[in-house]
Length: 91
Image (tube, rainbow, N blue to C red):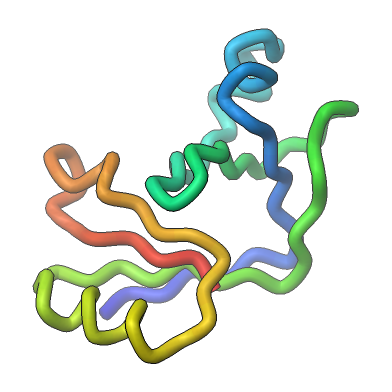
């Protein structure tokens, strides 16, 4: 499992995301499947802030499902499965 830590992530909903400046859209970390929010490295006035988040990458679906069933998570993503070959969880 790979881990990436972020001091801050900025969260916007889908409607706000598509109205953002391209440079902010390009800071996308991932799109959540749980609530369809977009998680960004750059801030914008529409965003909420999450502090001290960790993004986990799971290669095996059974490990991913086990983790999300037993842990408190912020969001997960199946949206990047084709391009990254990983299941993503934000904690």
